[in-house]
Length: 181
Image (cartoon, rainbow, N blue to C red):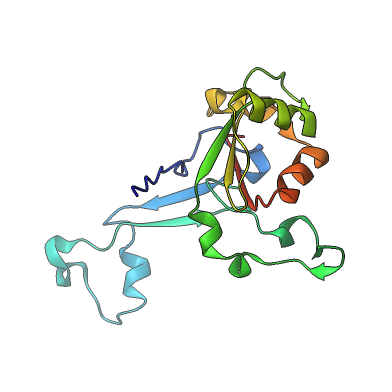
């Protein structure tokens, strides 16, 4: 059996609209000359001439929030409990195996911005593609937002999964979902 891995990740950038301004990533890039002062703190007496071609390390200082870039939210992110009172899993408790499973894409690009996807919408999409969900399948939700990434209207673009749609997936054994929003 052949397994194909598809990398859906995006990289972090300054000045690309990917999050509300207060939560946007901020990356301070230091080139080989600018970083010398920081590196010299680790090596008392170090001079630029002691380094190959007088160059220190190129480094980045990154400020992030929980939702920057491609990421996985643990149940703990949403609530302190799950499964009717059990302590919610933190990210280090999410089984890695859940992240390497077959996936199915749902196409909700036709839905209007701000629409809340319901269980009936999920059922209709599964019927359209003639697919029966399997436990631990990864569900990828394609909304209009992906086509607007980096544009001024990105944050307001696309639909979102509502409670009923989310429960529909959970009740069928889905544990990981992805979205382009």
